[in-house]
Length: 265
Image 1 (tube, rainbow, N blue to C red):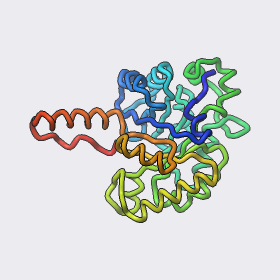
Image 2: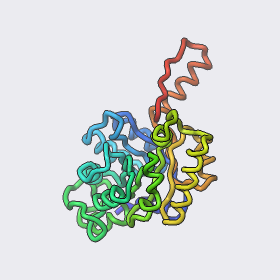
Image 3: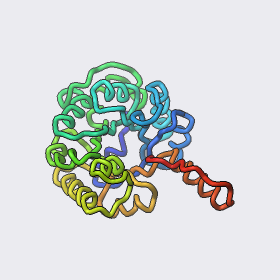
């Protein structure tokens, strides 16, 4: 059975860098899996990605030596089970705002005795290049469970959230977090409340042995966050990277007036 090298890196205290996949296209996933990122998160929350498309993407990502993760539409047992049973190696769960929600996430993602994930399926084992029996035996050691901290309520409850056994990492969504603070959604801000929240969360992560993660806009921001001690770093998305490069070329050539196409991810 393959080893989840991202989970291993985070457990060793090392940084791991990936990006988001928002285009409903396994071909794009296959090409992105060859670029060198540690992991790719298939976006089912905000993108028009079906479970069938996600399943194909998990397969080509894993087949190219990269770790396939998924962000389900919401932190519920049925959403978690569907992506894990169909080949994701971990889940990045949106809007985990309380200890109870973190406990529910672990319960849905881990088999007994750590949780109550239902047994069944074939594609999870195929994604790890093993048989179902081996998968059931070792999945708790390989599946990555990440709680998104992206609301002021989650920041307030972070000590309780991050103390939940079975949680591997937390991941800050800066846009939602700043929006919940009554500010404009942004990746970066010098706002004292935002800066203080990030440091508070990172320190709590260290206290509880939970890796800290954050979404950034570019490589320079990723380097800065890694230097600050963040470990799980997402750089933009495949669509954001594509559009940024295209707009760079358009500007360099003085072509037309580019429409604002680079959005949140």
